[in-house]
Length: 331
Length: 301
Image (cartoon, rainbow over all chains, first blue to last red; front, side, top):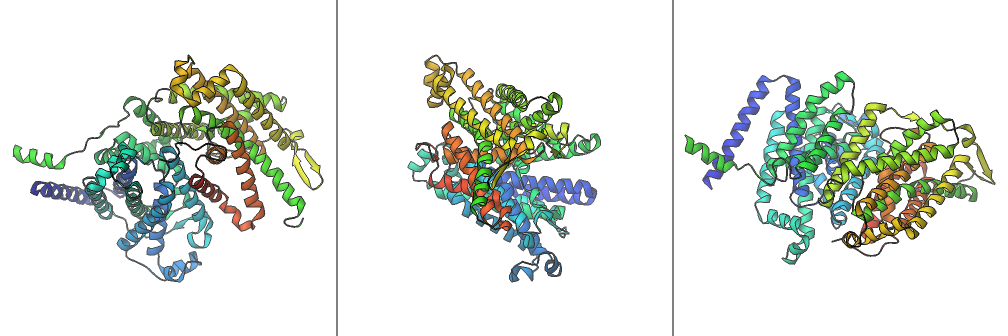
């Protein structure tokens, strides 16, 4: 128990020192890339709750991100500009300007609420039907945002969002996300989710409520997706409805498939895909070969699916406690 | 023309027929592949896109009759279907169903981005020979020559295909494999061949639908396949995905309801058309997940 606490504390401290060092040494571009990587990690780890651990194949993450991004952007926007840009905002939204952390949490909570509402009907469906229903949900959200011109500025999107997001905000949320998911997985909730993944009927016959334990990972995942959407919005400072669509959902799925079915796998997948696409982007620009990144990712995915279907990490987790004990013995 | 006059409604019904014919052809491919190997082939819409672009090339190169172009596009789709099945889907066939779905996402992304790379993402106009644009009028209803061809051709294709699966040896093998793949193997059916043919025929129909789509809307781009593909899947689910007849019925139902949604509601609602289609999908999945013609089965837990 004590070891577990110490291992966790040390990991967070190391992450903090690394973040601090990077914050003071790297230039703005590299810092932005590091922040993007953190957001990818939040997204991949939160998506793994449904897709890796409960066996529910959801593609709806971009929809939850969009909800979180728009809500938090509207909440942090100065009221004077809101009056001009979004005339139809309801009164209670038009006159508020909330601190960043509160806007993020509210954005996440609204995303979670939408997951709850959509989850009830959709979670009764099996595997691939669920996947298509969540794509449908994504398109519904996108159409609503595009058409509610006087609130969301439609296809133009919202720009001039204040760039609150920095490396601290991102990596605090990375730690919160990983810790929460890890705690959930190592509780009765996590065991119920794994049971559902392995065999729904057996799980149900053991008294596990399918509705409850399928809704839980979807809603929790949506919360963190909403937060990540908010971080994203305040990092790139401009959002449009098309920022949150199928290519993004596909990228997140690729991260999980390449990484493997564990938290470690999700983190590895997110970092790998993030780094590869950052490396390829300049090449894409230089050679004018647009679409190259997606082609490489798609081929990589096909190869992994055929040759190593379990992903890089498989089911294995990086055991921080064992690592800590090992290092202590060495000393 | 007054809103909601008889002529207006008739015109909308004709439009629904045209759109429904195209959805039906695409939906058949979904249905054939799904009923045999339980795969939702997400890249199906992108084959529609490939069909549209090859049609544009054939129209420019051949200057020939539109029927020749239809035939060539069908052959192109047929071959693409065989290649995709061989390269991407056969190696993972024994894997869980979700793997197949992810694979089809990868194939879709691959095709779309190769399209962007080679053809640029810029939409281009899809010009058809002038005689096909000639307007035919019957009373207050009017449509173009090509619209009539779309409806007639897809009806002929659907009937031929239905007879083909009903009466030929390979068609019967197809239905047997759809019912029980293991038993079919034991009966000496070459399952690999059946699956390959299902992919080939489905893709040929999608490619032909791509030509129709381009001719109807006049514009094509490498990303055009996504929405029609997804909507055709919705159509197949509405009608009953396990049966070709269900897919066709669903295609027409979706075509009609989409056109009526846009045509009969106030104009500022028309932006919500796609949201309507997918809400319809979720509602159908809730109240009758096996579709209009389907029997109850393993859709829900």
